[in-house]
Length: 462
Image (cartoon, rainbow, N blue to C red; front, side):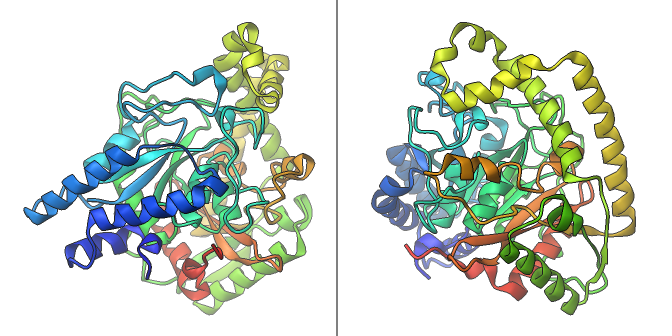
């Protein structure tokens, strides 16, 4: 296998067996970035010299028998709303071009402590909200399956770079699906963990009560490994829960025999009728898991329209609270799309926000009840393959046509991954949802599908 397709788990094993060195892997990735990223725009800032110096240090430590942690020598890309000491956190906006981070975000610090090497900062939508825009300081990322298409957002560079083999690990954030949308559009694995499991300190907020930091990888085992490093209590993040990190990879290969999976069909059949290829892919995933021994049953939840309304009121109210000072004094420095979306919050009242939070509690209880009867939920992620990036109306249509926001509202862990390819050779996707703090079972189901469906071997024709 070419070095650029190695995941973190495989790279660490190759380092230990002296079949590959951190320097060799880093050079292979830097060469690939130089060849492909001018077309994909995954990076807004590549820190090549520092990354190579860190790879040399990691190689010397291995030679001396010292291993920092389970990601020793593994490169990682970081979404550009997450602080990396000494690098700009621009949030893809003219407003913050000179904003140099003084310290690492907690999630970055934990990855470094485990031995990971930061390659640079990755493309996003402006303040993780706007959409692919052409009036910003950096061009939007493009989908490596077809660069004329959108890679999903807002963790766009994370999804595009992983799918293209530019790095084995990436950090994303997810407020209304922004880890899982690129995972769906680019055919990778993206997890929104349980709310409060991973610290958000050092991440520019979009909506305080909906924001999550999540791992993005090319396979399920790497995602479990990355979460084991990221998870853990942070007393300085008000949302952080004092729950220990789980043994997320312990049951990866146990299979799904006798696990109970609830299929939320109404999301893609009646709430938001999906593209026929998406519907067929979801039915195929369900059949495969049943053949593997899972017990499937249909589950009903509140409608996608209800979830979307609650998410929209909460997100826009909280985003307005953050951006109102700049929107009042520096509106022209925002891109048109982000400015228009952020201004929506100005028209919401306190009563709207309170009622949305009240309905949110009811929705949380409904999903909790459903997960007493089943172990994991299966549902759609995106209702369509990726849209062309030069078709603003088509791109805008993809944002409501999804089933990701329900689990930002409820906080339950949700993982999106490939379910196959469309006739146009673009990824199709599936989403699995678990009980709070039971990411281990979620990974177990995702791994069973990955193994049976062969999705870890899907790579774009670059």
